[in-house]
Length: 224
Ligand SMILES: Nc1ncnc2c1ncn2[C@@H]1O[C@H](COP(=O)(O)OP(=O)(O)O)[C@@H](O)[C@H]1O
Ligand SMILES: [Mg+2]
Image: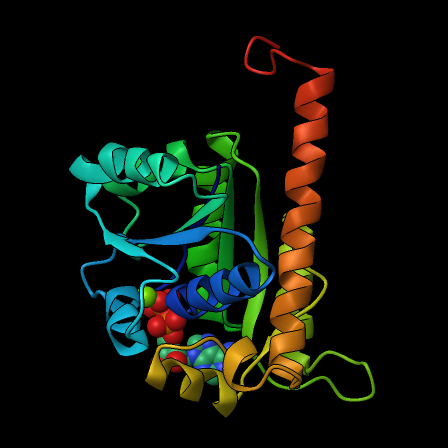
């Protein structure tokens, strides 16, 4: 079972990214579940609106994280996505410790950049693989990033942050898909938003595969 945590600034798109990539993985035939660790409970609300438990959602706080992950293991899930709260606290640290990979969705703004930098520092000190995803971006024009995205990318490049080359564009179709507890890959499967999430999921998989290979070559990475 792969554990992927989604962290970052409030409003940056954690819950939206979590539910949408879970839907992509589910539609690809994987058995996935969600863990909502944010008291705001957006993923729980999403599950309620969805009406079915084809993508099960558990709620968990710091003290119940181990149990929740053990339940996911027993359910033989291929993957669990942990939708995190914005706070960088002890609870967040225990989630990070349990994750194989962390996604940092961020809007291309200066305030998001500030929070993302803090997360990057933390993840680096924890030696945890992660990737930044630009979310809520203005559309690309003729293949070119919008100016705000370009600026965010160069700021991230300066600190050597692993950054997904794609973007999740700000789209009404994404916000609307949540109304019925759906991912945009379900409400608009051939639309551009679904294509962006599918590309993101492929990118994450490539990284997870690479890590597995690295681990196979160096069977005791922690001792190294
Ligand atoms: N790419 C996007 N396009 C349109 N709306 C988005 C997008 N990403 C997030 N949103 C909307 O922005 C708001 C905040 O997103 P959310 O996923 O709840 O952030 P977080 O979980 O990080 O606090 C929600 O209303 C959501 O529907
Ligand atoms: Mg949220």
